[in-house]
Image (cartoon, rainbow, N blue to C red; front, side, top):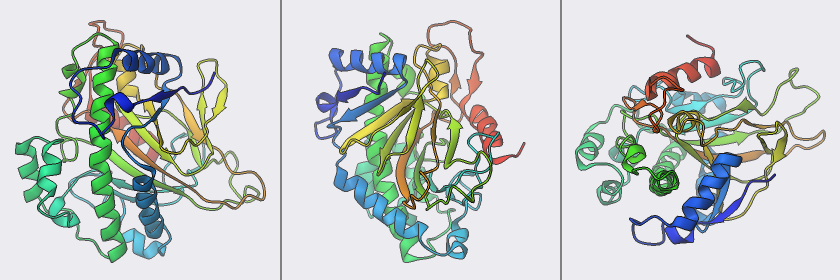
Length: 339
């Protein structure tokens, strides 16, 4: 079994907003998300040039001295506990292993004033965030000011790319609901506050520095086995290294397909759909001995609004209802080793 590749042209961001679901596309997504939990989408409207630019700016940030990056560490931003830089080995996505050999920068709360996006941002944001919430975002300014030109460029590029991923995610959610023959608002209405402090959706730039497998800790990986936490994830990879566990228990090596977005189901979506869609384990292994290459990726983790209650959409009680923010806190506790 492999991860399917699906042509998303019918619902591409290059087209005007799609209101009518495409039956064949919905069926392809349903098959992928029930059998593997992952799918490659090509022709989404997000170009390779866009991805490459965000990765290049992100890499400039990661190559700065640690004392510079530390000024924007995760936990320093009042509007979001998850916003900011995550240092090497701080996170353990598999709590049974040593800390992951990766760094990350998380963008969770959009603040156009701080990020220098200019007055046209309102028009862009307006298609994604409600006008009331937009006003709140524009007024709030409690996030720290950029401490360097590199950080400013990072925040600027992340904000713009966050919006692109958000719009694509909405289209994927609509198709997922259509594939289950349910009202799209069941999913869409739970994602009204994306980009604000009322929602934990995160654009994460990931950087895996060179590794000497001979000196790494016992059982250490670049990224330990885990499933994602929320609704869906969009992943953009610069190189290979990701593995996904199939339903038979075997790990599949995932290729890099230029111009394609890798999309997978998160835990809350699996609960929401009563296990119809599957949230699969995945990991990033250490590189082979003698391989000193780095690895980069961008992951957009779409999370339901903090106060959204996730319960089985078919009316069953296989999973008890749970608040989105509560589930996220439980998973963060495992990953970061706190209660």
